[in-house]
Length: 145
Image (cartoon, rainbow, N blue to C red; front, side):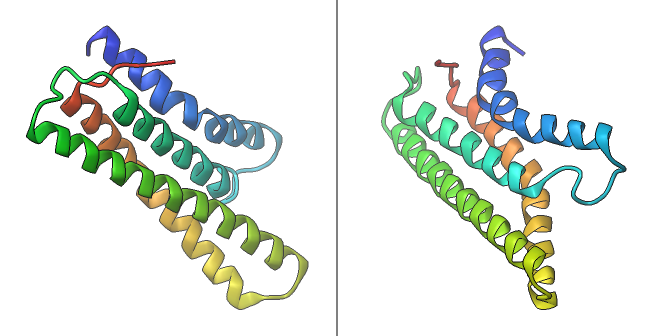
């Protein structure tokens, strides 16, 4: 892996996911492990930021392959990442709202919806990280700070 790839992964993957991992590690050290040790709320926000950072890098970055059909690929990838960003910010809001509602009332039907959204966020996270790495390799994206 080239030095620029390592820097890109640090800036665009590790940095946005750090609140998720730090929060989980702190909760793991303080209490016993449970399904809520690693927060789906934090993960949704982190993945939204990750998608937003990659979108910005695609839109504003200098691409050595920025010619013809590749330009269309870059635009479609950027559009895909902004859609993911919006979706994950919506998931963040949905999980936060559902958690608040279920903690203040006996809404058993909403608890299953909360768990389903949390499971979806946890399941889609590896897919998004893999797509992000493939996008970086495909378009030879560089880290910009």
